[in-house]
Length: 256
Image (cartoon, rainbow, N blue to C red; front, top):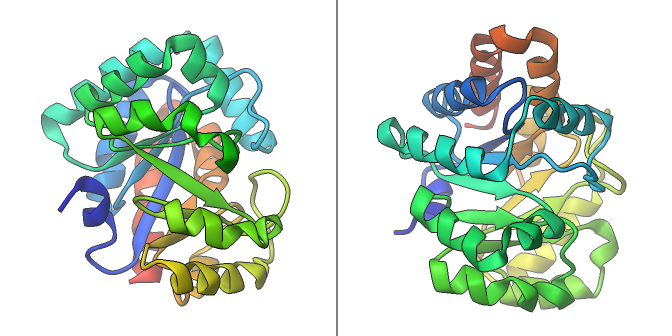
């Protein structure tokens, strides 16, 4: 069983997102280890970027803080290697096409393999252009995660057919952020996916409370939470680790 299959092998998966380097890489390192111990099944690490088009203000500000603190892709790779000394928690990078190409796509995927990063999520890479990265991903054993959204409509079957690892289901239109309501479109999307392929579907964008998590876990295989956690990091800064760990524990309990 590979790292990603392991994520969904034991009930519903809880997948927290944090921005690497916010407020510092030392804190990110501690957060990853503590979130894993608190029950996180896969941790999504955002590589800070100056133009994160899929993100709302909460994560945009986190990117800004991380870049201002001097966070670089190389430093993030070094940090993940340190995490690997004490933790085997599956890690996925969330980033954009530009930082990968600037870094060098092949070098990026090779470093993912060496640091034990099992997947990459690239929101601004359209399905039709995934061949730009897929050969490098395949060569170094890194899974390129497909995303679907309510606007994917007829393309959902197409995307599902070729998807690997799991499918990231975007719950609602627009950018990331905390929302009061999660739309019903996403339940319908997952039904279509499962008709085509037996692949785990995790829902992200907008989930922030244990009640919401519990609700979407009824019809999905996993719950992804970003902005609500990044907000805790912003609120507590250097002292955020226990607060985030407690949040992760509560969310994991809600979807068990």
